[in-house]
Amino acid sequence: MEVQARSNYFHHFWNSVAISLGSTVIGLLIAVPAAWAMAFSPTKRTKDILLWMLSTKMLPAVGVLVPIYIIFRDLGLLDTRIGLIIIMMLINLPIMVWMLYTYFKEIPGEILEAARMDGATLGKELVYVLTPMAIPGIASTLLLNIILAWNEAFWTLNLTASKAAPLTAFIASYSSPEGLFYAKLSAASTMAIAPIVILGWFSQKQLVRGLTFGAVK
Amino acid sequence: MGSIRLENVSKHFGEHAVIPSIDLEINDGEFVVFVGPSGCGKSTLLRLIAGLEDVTGGRILIDGDDATAKPPAKRGLAMVFQSYALYPHMSVRSNIGFPLKMANLDKAEIDRKVNDAAAILNLTDYLERKPRALSGGQRQRVAIGRAIVRSPECFLFDEPLSNLDAALRVNMRLEISELHQQLGATSIYVTHDQVEAMTMADKIVVLRAGNIEQVGSPLELYRSPANLFVAGFIGSPKMNFIDGKAAEEFGAHTIGIRPEHVALSTESGKWMGKVAVSEHLGSDTFLHVDVPELGHITTRTDGEFPVRHGDTVFISPDPERLYRFNADGLAA
Image (cartoon, rainbow over all chains, first blue to last red):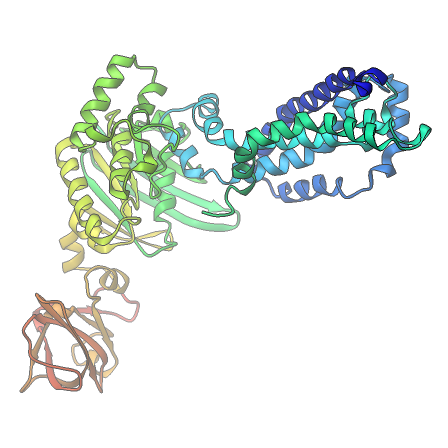
């Protein structure tokens, strides 16, 4: 109660929900076609592009903080939900493309060829054959990204003040200025992780199946 | 109607010519088998006909119409894949009905045709199952059902039996042959198994390195192979090849003798050798005989021939059934 009274938990909670769901959905819309193209009509450079995408994850985020901060300031995106959705989507996009790519790779080419022989157009092939077969993969990508975006603290702390601040910023607000209040901090943390723990609990099976798909035949 | 004509068809993957240039005529209603060792381009040729690969040069005519640029679905062909390629998330009924659904037939019509196909293939009891709940042979039947349901001009089979165990393979071989008699549609069947080729085909096309080595009926290929490759490929066990002095005696660079055309005796004969291995199959006995001047000779005799490892036997070729080849390996 005290935690809720001190700072508006639900305000931050809805920010977190909007940012993680928004970034994941937009990310999927971009990652699914990208991974599809790379898995089913690869070019000579496909492997390089995949590695390049992954390499962006190896750069310490703080290295690009200043330029991104300036860009966000100029575009008026600081402390806005849409700004955070964009940045979360971008930092998680390589992981999404990689996960979906490896997942799509598991779908045997002959099945898609069979669909083509059976008279399916590209659209019907996507709707009736590919998507139903890829649903576990897409679902686990979705879940993992919601979790990643929910827990992300670096960009959310640096690019928000209060208006768009998600739960990570809410917890952080319990630390420095007044010293550490462990009891309140713990309560706040528990409240912050509770939603994602519940989500993870219910989707555990799906998530593990998605992540280990193909590891064992 | 289901005649197919290949004119000068070629296929290159980058610099590599998988199929340099092929001309072939397949008549309506024929059962044609493409046979050859792995990597000979037989599957590629089938995929070119199917439209799953684009030709590099030449034309493919189906029923006299140029189909070279047509997409697979517009060619009026149906294909059965080696891995069955069933849709794992659909029931058997939906799998078989899928091509009809894609053709926008109404539901009652689809149900009727699916039920007919299932009856032909003994799948009626399994229509509501998912493919993973079926055995290999049943899965293959579903794949065939998916092909026959839209009454295509021509069936394409890409090594459909190679994932099945030996007993089932023989059964399915018979079933496919029966189905062909029943439906009368043109069939093109790819295999590396010469037994399948011999037993099923009206016409065999022997391929090597993307070239046609010989085209003919199974018995034509057996009786008069055009060259050493075809001679060695058709027939089981493999034909014995002898060159050098022993061949010159018969006026050829190389002579070929089929194991079943060697007379065996324990007393007298043309060549003498020692039995290295004897394989008793019950109905037949295969003897692998080491002959000092010839090398290893395989012979086939009846199941009761009383010899064992190390015994001396005499072998004589049947002069009427001797194959002569010149220095280029062509039949002389």
